Length: 341
Image (tube, rainbow, N blue to C red; front, side, top):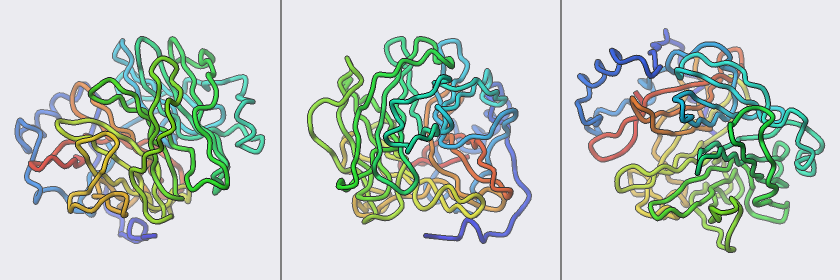
C-alpha cells in the first residue's frame, strides 16, 4: 500500500470545464498538444502534475461510476448504491439523481449481500437498441460474490429486467466475481472482465444472444500476487486493447490510496504489458492518475469516447471523505500510451 496520495501537500485546484459545449477549452488544448491529440512520452506529467477533476455540478456523490451516452446525446450514469443508483446529465457537467435501477429491491442478490441492498460496480453499455447492465453483489472483504445481468429499453429507474446470475465465486475459488466490464472485440465477440484482489483480473466470453457466459475458459489478465487490484476497464484504440485497473485501496475516505493504472495488448484476452514491458499478470501497470492535494484515491475508472475526446470518469475522495465524481479528458502520447489532461 502506498500513502503518497495522502501525504502530498495540498495546493489550489486547477479546475477545467469538461462539458461537451466547451469548444473554446478544447481549442486551447489542441493548440497545446497538437491536432493529433498526442504528445511526446517525455511530456506526460508526473503524478504531482496530474490535472484536477473537471468542473461538474449537481448530484455528484458517486462511487464506481459507469457512463453510457444515450441516442439523444444525454448521459446515463450508474454507480454503487442501494439497488444500483442512477444519475443523468444533458451536458456531462450538471448531474441529477434519477432514482434506482431496482426501486422495488433486488432479492435475487441477497444470498451474496447478507441481506443488504447495496449493489456494487455496475457496468453500463448500449447494445442492439437496449441498455445492458452487469453488476455485482457481495460483502466487503469476501469473495462469496456474484455478477448479474439486467437490461432495459430506456435505462430509466424501474425499467430494468433481471436476467439472473452470469458468474459467481465461492470462498474456495482463487478469484472474486465483482467489478464487471463488458467489451466487444473487433470480431464482434463479447467478453466480460472482472476481479478484485485474490488472483486478480479475469475474463470470460459472453454469448451476445443471451448476455450470459459461453464456454468454460477463464482467462487471467492481471494480478499482483494477491495484492490490491480491481475494477478492470477494457477499450480498443488503434492497434491495441487497453486494460485499465485500479491499484491499492478504496473505501477509506481521504485515506484511500486508489490509483488508475493501464497496460495494453494486441489481443483482447492478453497478454497485457505496461509501458516498460512488464506483464500485468506479474504486477505490471503504468500509472495514469493518482491522488494529489485535496483529491484522494481516484479510481474505479470508466473510459468512453465522446464527441470532444476520450473521457476518463472515476470517483475520488474529498478531504471530508465524501466520494465524488471525477472527469478528465484522455489522450495518447506519441508512443500510444494514455494520459489525462
